[in-house]
Length: 114
Length: 111
Image 1 (cartoon, rainbow over the protein chains, first blue to last red):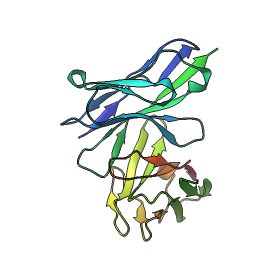
Image 2: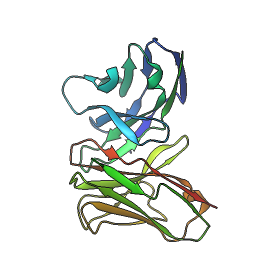
Image 3: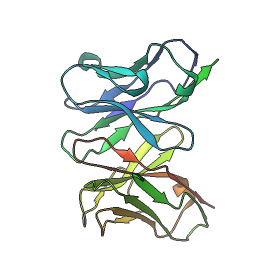
Image 4: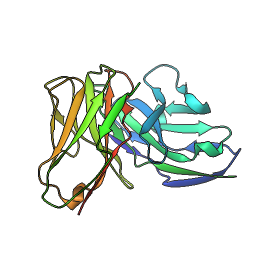
């Protein structure tokens, strides 16, 4: 069965520092991979997605993620964090069989210190 | 440009009561989904629909029913609410291969 693991429940970084959020997945083939962000009291917004091709994917708000098949990972990175990046981040895997059903990780809550 | 709209946004129920959550999307998407979000568990798929008149079970369908009588609407029903159904519910819609667009959530408390 598909599954997604986000090992870090909470992460705190200083504003201007670099960020890496980890995501590992379990899937029988190459999945669709996504990162979403959720601000307090809001729905989820797509940051970026990987379907095929270049394994380094650029997203909105200066985020990027790298698909590493050998490690079953899709880690999210940002070179310099802004206070407005404080939110909860979810990694998700989608079934290439169709219907866009997504399996989500438990999320990583990011706090940013000034 | 509304996108995905959920009503109501907040509701408190007593155990055994019934209710319906309404999701409406104005993007002409074929696929619609209901997820629940619980602390430490991310989002889990309850039911989904691949088109008008169709529904299918997700990961955690027990205790819920859904209907998709119109393409733009996807209803989630609780026939007899239980405290374990206290959660935040999210509706989403998409086209095949496209991103999911989420509503702002409906917070349900069952006493």
